[in-house]
Image (tube, rainbow, N blue to C red; front, side):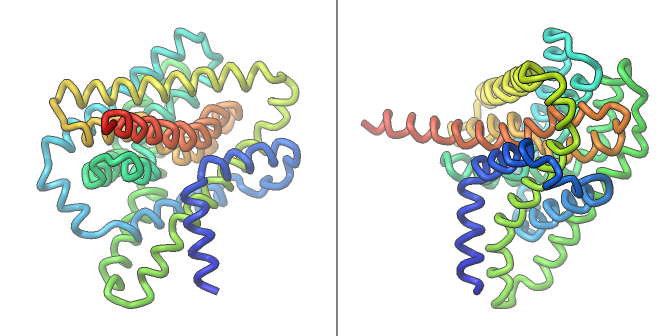
Length: 322
């Protein structure tokens, strides 16, 4: 029974973008399918995603933060400077309505995505650096995300910075800490690696549920306002994500990083924890339901684009090898 589940978990991890996109399309045609993923349920699901991250982290991963402080500092500064600034710029260039603007800004102010570590591994990046950046940005998120939202979105809506701080603490730091504690306590048991092998599939499934819940929430607006709403929002998400990759790589070049580290910082900066943004949008901007749309599109697109970018990096390696 375990082996089929492990195979399914590997398949979901390798085809995360395809699976999440398929769930989004399916939910558009069957909107009640994930109508239950709202409010507290959505928050719990995100907590499970962060728990799976904690279960795969070891004490060695956290030692990276101490051993490579300059690398992590440069990465964290790039993460929390580039993406909020690009989001703020795009909001004004595209003249987005307040709800969509809030969503894009929230994605930009969130920490790096969990799946970025997988993408760094696939493209022969610096995986240790990737894990260190993800840990650092996640630990900083309770403070940085509310602060940056106050700076970038304070003119659009009143930001409950304290409430956002507590929410991020509950749905990210605490689950990650529990996962790390379980990993530290039970890692020597023979059954624990089996449990860990199932975590990628569980994480992808939970992310798909969150995206499905968002599509269910905004379904009526999408139908009423037609394809242009989706395409316009996707254009902004595409620009935000792509510029994140480009500027992240540029930051690595300016810091004179190796090729592997430049690839990693590019992926870490460009791929955001859009699942967290989705939950925060649903919790704090409920009066603006369309604010979750850019977050949901980002959930799916960041996985797709990360896979594409990793493939381009590998193709470049093969070209140079010739």
